[in-house]
Length: 409
Ligand SMILES: *[C@@H]1O[C@H](CO)[C@@H](O)[C@H](O)[C@H]1NC(C)=O
Ligand SMILES: *[C@@H]1O[C@H](CO)[C@@H](O)[C@H](O)[C@H]1NC(C)=O
Ligand SMILES: *[C@@H]1O[C@H](CO)[C@@H](O)[C@H](O)[C@H]1NC(C)=O
Image 1 (cartoon, helix red, strand yellow):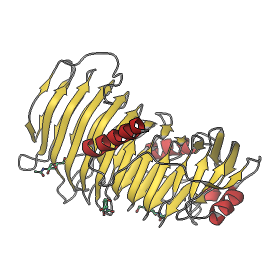
Image 2 (cartoon, protein in one colour):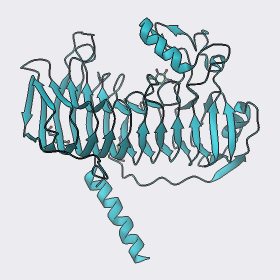
Image 3 (cartoon, rainbow, N blue to C red):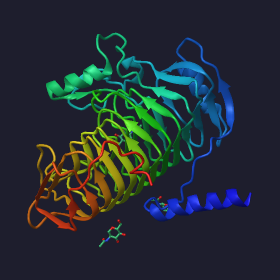
């Protein structure tokens, strides 16, 4: 008994000391008790699942026990959770009409891209969550009902036509607190997988995101204007930013990204929508393999924003094209705002394969300000620093074909 307690205490203390950016003390979530157990049938189960969620007592979870459940959009009420057991899959029916916001634009291209409801919405909630070792499948690659293409094909044609796809996000959390995502596997989202807005207290722990690299705009986890966020022990492979911290209508702050592994994707990003600022972010114990970017901060004079107090510690990368990319001139848009990237530190970073390292501030008087300590890169790499104030240096001595557990202490 004593042994177990002391191990538990050490674990809690370590998490607290090495990652005091989320101001909460975060420990491994516990699955809530079940209020109802649902069994899969072969039909559309939207009403059954939604009714069960609406009737569930606060503090409890609706359990999907096994088999494949097909559903349209669902809302998880305050205090209630959804538990998808191992062996159960919840599939988003690929019928745009089910997600339409009222203008009949969901599943089409236009100049806005806001025509669809998310598959799962959590709004104005406290203490809700999604738990379990099962899978939520957004079916982004399936042909849409009444159309001849999939959500992902639509997203690809938006790029070539220079407009926006109206596709549903998989999980949207707004104006909420104390929200948990635990163990669940999310795959094939038609659009972002997890997106939050003005949410204070978010724990994403031990989840897997597994979506093809070719699926456009399928960001993994995007905390936007949110605070006290922990993303820990997750595996994220997708077709856009693995994690992107944004601040479009409120500041993002106190965010811990701990002991994660990123497969394909666009990397660990802050921006580009950081107008309200992003601060006090710790990324610790991260391995990236095969992402296009590694550690990236992006903004421009259109978005502006102060990004400060960002620490990257114990990061290992392999086959990453742009391992560090700090860019104040992102995209082609310009405006009248002034982005500021200051007090950004890199500690114990190993990049085993060659890549381009870019530090690009706005001007001499508005440089990116970074500190390097124990930064090891491959000697075939390119180091491009323009308008950058860099304290410390790097060594060109990194080699190897596997990060192993290097990023994870
Ligand atoms: C973040 O968590 C700390 C510690 O629990 C709390 O004092 C603070 O109010 C929280 N911040 C927000 C914005 O909720
Ligand atoms: C959630 O917040 C986002 C970002 O502010 C907004 O675009 C979206 O409409 C909101 N959705 C809901 C359901 O409130
Ligand atoms: C720099 O950021 C760290 C957090 O990473 C913070 O503790 C420190 O106070 C900041 N320093 C300055 C000068 O802002």
